[in-house]
Length: 313
Image 1: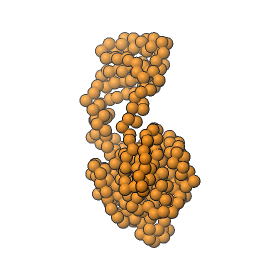
Image 2: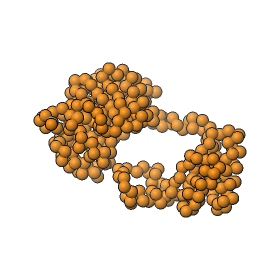
Image 3: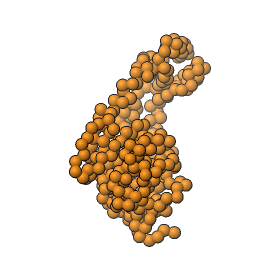
Image 4: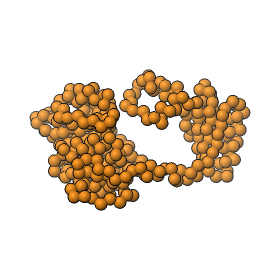
């Protein structure tokens, strides 16, 4: 789609007044970038925790405060945008304003050029739907189109989970995939011989994409998907619980994971920065698990833990 983008750079104290002017002119959807917000985030002044900030976001730390709005590129909207810009210039003469047109039809799929078939474990190969690949003897090929959901299989956190699943998942096992994203781990579980898998994600888009990938891999008879917040309200017990989340969510889930596991079950968790490895491992042990192994790949790690073979109350 052709669209118009208008960037308005102003002083930090003028951000809110600029948004007010835009509202008066009928522009309700705006993006506000304030480097001071990122500074507070980096200094951990917010109530929430984060594990990783990309270089693209960090680059904005030294940028100027900015308000951006978008419109579909039509002659009427071009004239409308110019009128709105005139109003902003009148109220804020020193504002730096740029308007340009672009087309998202090319860049929105540009990333696909870099997503190629990849062997991520001893047997599992992740193949995007738009690529050709001839499986070798013993390989299990996961067809995937992540859409707008997280999970191509090439990220270290996902590949670590798949490798641990290869080692710990037994044919016929019941699997609970918490935070399923694109559904890649659930499909991997099915190919590894899981008897029944329940995939859960809080994001409805992830649920939709997971269902598509499960159908694509013809494993709908053993894999079910539902929307939910971690394991809240779920009545399902598994031999293997796999959770590719982030450190804080893994620790939160660990308090409830045992209630959804069969005796002797395996708890595989990832999305954990190596610097938080010990803290997460300690939290998992505190919840009654025994750490079997911790694998690292770059800045990330995954933890495999077991539940003692004693029936939970």
